[in-house]
Length: 319
Image (cartoon, rainbow, N blue to C red; front, side, top):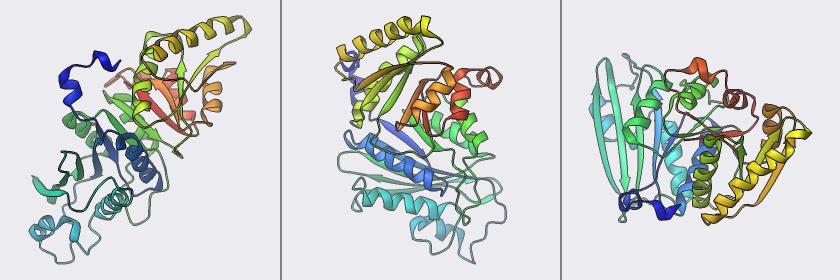
């Protein structure tokens, strides 16, 4: 598949948006982004969304000074504790060096004294790590807007409820992750108990969408050396041969593109139940995700929605 890439595609750096809210799960998502991007030195943006605060408490610190010294605040400014911890994880993991060139910028937001703030680190090779503290009416709108403006290849957000008490921004409630997963035009990973080293479970239904999603994930998984496994569900014994044929077609195409298959399996039973059960053995359940912006009512009747809702672990909607 890489042979079909244009020169512009090859020159364009892979971009990952990691949504941070102070929860342990959001930091697990960050570490997965590091694994995803390490071999290709992807650009990573760390995003914290906060709502407009007309009475932002600064402890008497001048707002302009706070902006200019964004990462040096000794105060519990909204979102900064979480972003600084995320930055420190990147340094600890060797993804970000403290000697990278640093640029800070600010955008005024009416009614909010702090506004949008950004710190961008750039390596000598041009790799970028960006910390972005963004104001938005709601977390889902902020994430979707940033996703569109930044043209990210992958967005990672958690569906965890273990947000720290010090951060009041409950960014990733189930409803927020569902809206983003439904309406984003690009690939989304909804992190639930996200663990590395267990591979990607590529779920195949026989549709062109699921086949294309499997092909795309084979490329994505190769970037982080993640093994891929093919999975299909037959409703009963009479459908097993068809399910095996679906897997065989995908295996032939993926291997022909140069990506190895670590394993494959056909299960019999209810599609949602079988995928959710089998998926617990893997880092990610990979599903096709048709772009549904503005059509949540249709998405909520789909198998993808029910799997996303029922899964005990992380789900990728591959677009």
